[in-house]
Length: 151
Length: 294
Image (cartoon, rainbow over all chains, first blue to last red; front, side):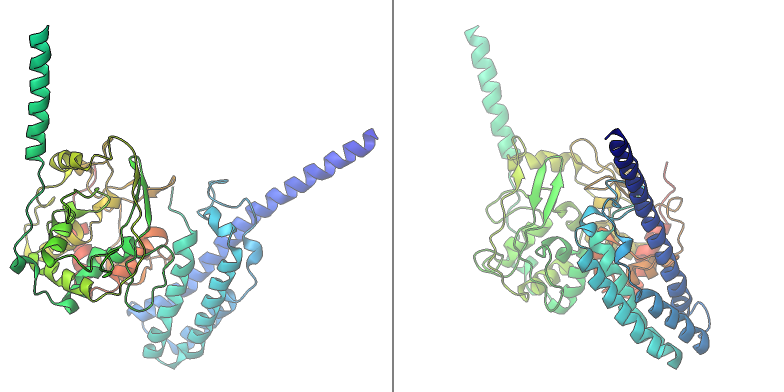
């Protein structure tokens, strides 16, 4: 019986350790994902703003990457306990983790906007500028309700 | 002993009466001050002043004309205040108010009944606005839809329930004039948008124990109003963005690193994105002209 208790304790300890890994791993992964978004948005945004010259081939390929990134399965990025009240390593508000379905819907909206952008990004600066706005707005749709301030 | 008692009583009654007399709210302005605004111009004043960000019902859809049903909660050390219904409903909103009453409400922060509004409503900023902008804003507000939601009573406790006491708060803490000397006409528009309509200092400046803004730390950052975070400082040593960067952020919400505004600032960007490029640049130039923080 003692062996059973010992084994059970070991498994429970191992499970919570793995769970902690999951939370920290998920936080790192979602931050990395956002960094990839901002990297690609930056290349397109600089063309939209006129800071860099419009390059149709580059715009098309970067927009295609952005569309792929925004249509990956992302629900595992948001495990319980990965909020800014429990941890200091994230700005995610607790109510985000209570509304993962809504976040996934917003993610899907971003995916749709990014897919539209990818379809026209190579068709000229006007087309790029027109389709860029909805993608930018879709970022705010999640950040506004679900991300907290900096510390 | 009895003489002392009567002396103290007289002083007390005299003091309260004097205070009551001194703290009387201002009279209603004449009609021609408040009437005749242009609703189309008023839409831009509405965006710059950010009325929707506080007076829309929480979770309201942002399509079509804004329905200013109120209900949003603002927690503070003095209680929780609820934005009132300022839709054009004749009973629950401002539909039956005269233009003069509405003008005094915004510029003097006094209700039609003569009660002072709590400083959660930044009337001390709005009073620096031009009369024409206020007339235009009133005309625009009249075009907005009606909603029958009753305004919620503020959840505050004695002594903050005594609204007349807010006269003293205003005497002590409401700015009497512009915070910054501009020294040039280019910066005047930026100052107007930041200090009067935009009321940026309400979030970006720290407050003292009685909730007044600490003007020595103007726009130098403050604790977040709710929760543990910080509202960033906007002085040039705290915000190293260029004028272009700031103007872009106020237009699209993109930071120079292509992060995107979140939280309350996302709501601000929804408003500032409706202004002209020139206005956004004016705000940016005002910020870049601020002195470094201490």
